[in-house]
Length: 232
Length: 96
Image (cartoon, rainbow over all chains, first blue to last red; front, side):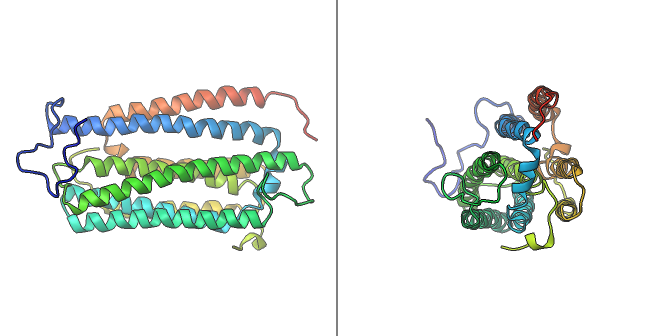
């Protein structure tokens, strides 16, 4: 397997950006973009399966889902949404910076994106701890006596942990991709003639954001909240 | 995606819209909409997702091939949701 650029600080003058199977740079760029979009279509189906399972149980146990959804921490959920939306902005700005060849802006925007993604993960970890403390962790700590139907409550909570957990795994991969892009960007690998890795890394990142955009209302905003739900 | 450079102004505008919609969706959850919370929440989420896809992901500037890929994914998701839910929503269970 040929990994041409690892180990060298800058692209050697005799190396070409154009891979041998493409006719020109535009075709290569279009193929790279399409490849990532096709992958994202498959990712829609992975999460789609979880959303569908959730939907089926939501239809069946609607009142119980509403009951426990209110117990999730909407303040952290909403804050995380803002964090991730901001990271999508910085990601779009880094693609732009790569496109116009502003190397320093590119690096800083990528760093910001990675930092915001990590912030999300920190908030998530804190939130999981709070859920543990609030006895919302089936199998680990689930001792509240107020549930009418504890079995159904646990179904919702399993969906909550699996869906947000799978999302967190995707986000971690995304942060790893950002770190890799930062390393390459600092070596000034990207510019107006070659910025596809930043663009398609961005596509992946935005997709992870879109998944969260749907997770928020479906997990946190089912029922009606009251002012005293606003706490950490 | 295109080789034409897109001005960042659009990104800031879309971002402002996204934050606004987030505040809207969270705010609405504090009002008593009853069963409508799902519909309203999902509708707002769809609008946000469309904004991210069209502008942040450059779909609006993209080749039609990219549109086809994402369209296919959504179509298959549609089959999954429609066929599954048409089963469960037409069962006459009385939960309580």
